[in-house]
Amino acid sequence: MSMKEDIENTEVINNEKDHRFEIKLNDKLAFVPYNFKNDMMGLFHTEVPEEYSGKGLGTKLALYALNYAKDHHLKILPYCPFISNTLKSILNGCSM
Figure (cartoon, rainbow, N blue to C red):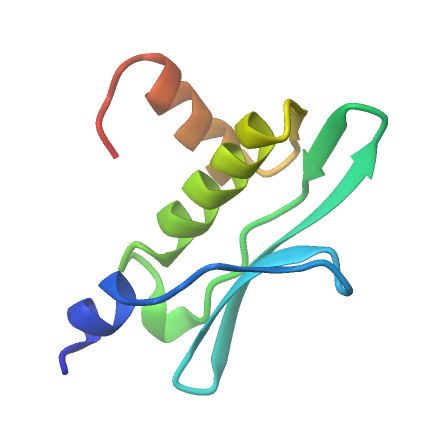
């Protein structure tokens, strides 16, 4: 299986214990930590292993986090510039 196929077939997991959305891939971990306050979800940064940078893991995590917020009727506090830009792209009608 190629790296692209590996990434496309990865599953995002909500690790509630560690307060982060994560993807495990070949003993590596990509993640977005979060925190809740009232009806808001703070998304702090997107961490992707260097060898997977630019391969779509960050986007996959960001979209999962944004969909989670939508499904749970939460407002998003995008402290992470990557997530903020992803949200802006969605709101401007760009396909991800």
